[in-house]
Image: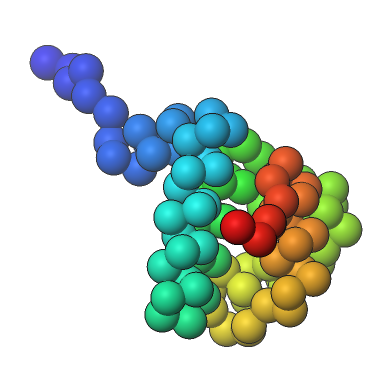
Length: 99
């Protein structure tokens, strides 16, 4: 008998296609990053939002960022420059603001 269930990863991916949900997800992750200084969680969150809406390759081309550079950020092998984070968030339709 075939299961009518969805995996947690698939559910998260589906939910992150919604712009407001993705915004809340990234805000929570950014808050954590600003608290502990560890980019890994925030980088993975950005990666999940990108993958929910596109492929990394397509996004890299759209954002004019080297695909390998994106993967090195997402795998926590490189620390991003602030301008890179701003560019990525902008291409995802978000912006940072001081509150």
